[in-house]
Image 1 (tube, one colour):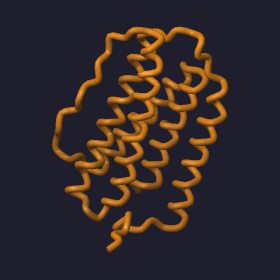
Image 2 (cartoon, rainbow, N blue to C red):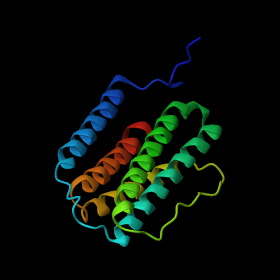
Image 3 (tube, rainbow, N blue to C red):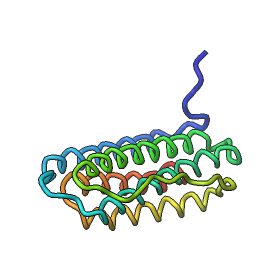
Image 4 (spheres, rainbow, N blue to C red):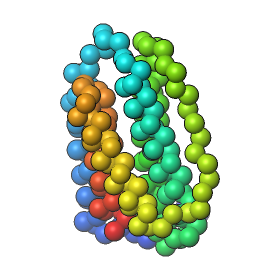
Length: 165
């Protein structure tokens, strides 16, 4: 028996917006991947900033997952947010691992303690903060990292504007 992915179907317009945002983010990431300068050593501060972004992504994913319990009518959209933020954390972890081979870092991954499920407004605010921070950090990076962080920022904006409205 098949179960639908979304319990509350998205409108055609909302689905097209999500798909468009994903295509734009993937395009930006692909276009900047060739500009990466892998010959330079990474500063520990840069790795720490990426680690903070990964932790933020994990926290947002955990919040979205926890919110499903109190907002079952929004389970589909919240599940998408959780999956995308988990993918962001995984991509950042891969970049951190790649950078760590070039430069030793003193950072260690931390786990986010479980908290009460957030309200939808709180989750939107957290995603807005994540968007702004990823955009700010993207402006300080170049190449692949700038594209990755820009894509994360765009995805967070789309999640707020399309999925959680």
